Image 1 (tube, rainbow, N blue to C red):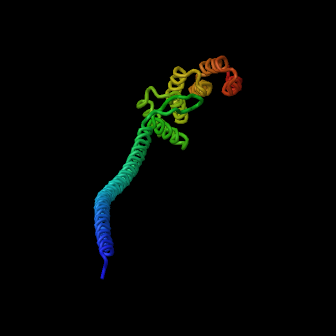
Image 2 (cartoon, rainbow, N blue to C red):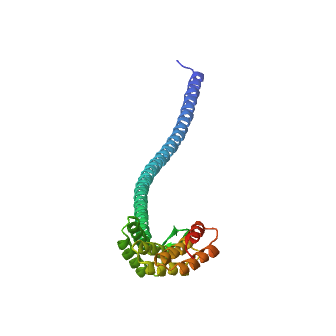
Image 3 (spheres, helix red, strand yellow):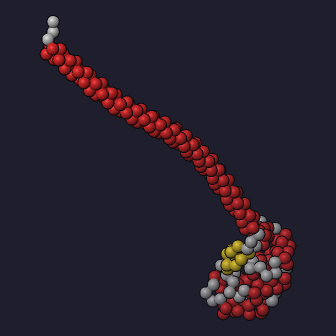
Length: 256
């Protein structure tokens, strides 16, 4: 049988255990709230992180789209530039071809015009401008003379002088005309043309020969007195010429 003291002790122990249980329950309850709060906070943080990652993923996707668009624009621009370069090169080739054709046309035009433009010529020590046709006609007439066809040469030289009355070739043409007439014994006409040549160009390279030829024509006409005067004129006017030397010899042989 338990004593009253033992019963009191037992009651005290039971009471103490109850208090301890209550304290432990309260302590356990307080720990769950903090854990819940921590879990909620962690969930919120995770949700925020997920949202941030979602936004970052969207931003990255948008950036990739922008980069792709930019690359497409760059590629398009490069293609345009390549086409432009191709067009520029083609245009440059066309311009170069046009310039070459223009140069060829200009050269051809210059060559054709040059055939009609006066050019400087030198005949018997005299320089002057002559048309290509004028030069050709004179040389053709002179070629007939050199072949010995003196009658045809007279006709060609007379026609040349008629068509080119102001030609620089005229003194030489008159000289050869006089010689052609001398060869066909047309002495009076020969003298007239030699005199015309001397009147036009007294300083002509063949002027001394023209005076000597006049004297020869006069001798053939039996006009020795006039021939002497002509030879004296030759010796006085052109004393250093070869024709003057021949004139001295001819003068010495003439009867007085």
